[in-house]
Structure formats: structure tokens, C-alpha cells
Image (cartoon, rainbow over all chains, first blue to last red; front, side, top):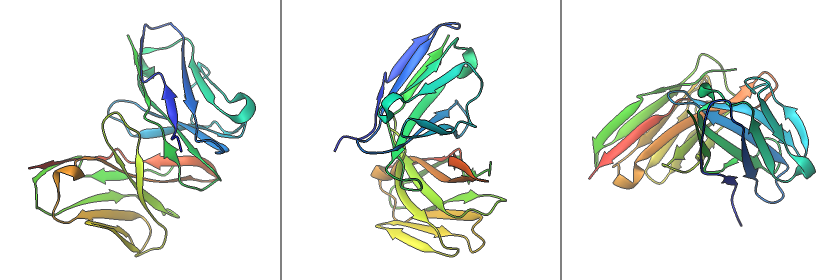
Length: 113
Length: 112
């Protein structure tokens, strides 16, 4: 069974540009989470989807971040326009049911110059 | 959001030695999890502890949940180079919020 996959693995963009990160959860997992780790800080929760619905987006830093999960399968996280402080590693995780083990993807390393 | 403090931040020891790393909070957690993360990969769950005072063993790794469910420890016996990695503790964000809150992690290096 394929694990959680994320694309791209690395992205280097300039301040003001737009970047879209993609996450493909484990097939059949209704719950999809986005997390971010900024250098020197802990991994922080961004938001949680249940199928296609945003269940909790209290961790989203500001309105430059937009997450979608159309059809309840893969998810995208768009940053527009990107700022220097958005640099970090963005992780996606999925679980079958709420409270189940979350399986993490390898992350996307975003560098904003 | 409940905070988790991990110590030490970095630890480098020789193969065969024993070590303990800690995860502490001022808040009570319904459960705590330990993850291990290797470079270029996401965190991988090692264990979940849910009962105060609980001890779980995974080969040479022993995990303990504090009686008050505010802290946890990970003890490794006879560390091996393959144990090298970033060890993270995490727990529910609490207050009805979804997702996990993580500590900053302990970077462990086992030298042959």
C-alpha cells in the first residue's frame, strides 16, 4: 500500500511568487492534515480536512494560505504571495478515522528568497 | 494549544551506551506519542501511551507516561548507530482542536 506522498519535494521561489504544494493521502483515508516546521521551531498544525470539508483551520497563519481538497482525495496548499517567513518544511498526514494514527508524508521543503 | 518541551535538544553518545530523553508539559495530555524522523522523511510513529504510569517496550526502547500524564520519557538501552535520528513527542492539541502539538525534538547521534 502506497504511503502519503507529497509534491514537490523541494521548491525554491522568490518573495511575492505563488507556490502550490500537493499531498496525496493514503487511499481511503478521510482525514488529511497539513503541518509546517519552520527552522528552529516545532512542527505546527495548520489545518485538518475530513473528506472535502475543512474541519479545523485554526493553525493557518494568515489569508495568504489557501488549502483545498476537492473531491476528498488529494489536497493542495497554495501560498500567495509567498513571504520569507513562509520558508520551512510542510508535512501532510492522513488517517482513516479521527483519532487514528496519522501517517506522515516526506514533506515539501519550501525556500522563499 | 498545549506545549511540549523536549530535552536534551541534542545528544551524541557512543554505541552501546544507554540514554534517556524527556518530554515535559505543564498541561495534562489524554495521550502522548513518540515519533522518529530521519532526514528527508516524515515522522514515523513509534508508540502511543494513554494511561498514567504506563510503560511500553519496543525492543531496546522503553517509553513511560508520567503518573500525572504531563510528561513522558524514552529510554534506549545499548544504543546502536541505527537509532540515530530525531525523536519527537506529540500529543493532541486539546481544547477541542484537531491535530497534534509537537515538541521540538531530540537530535540523537549514536557513534560507532
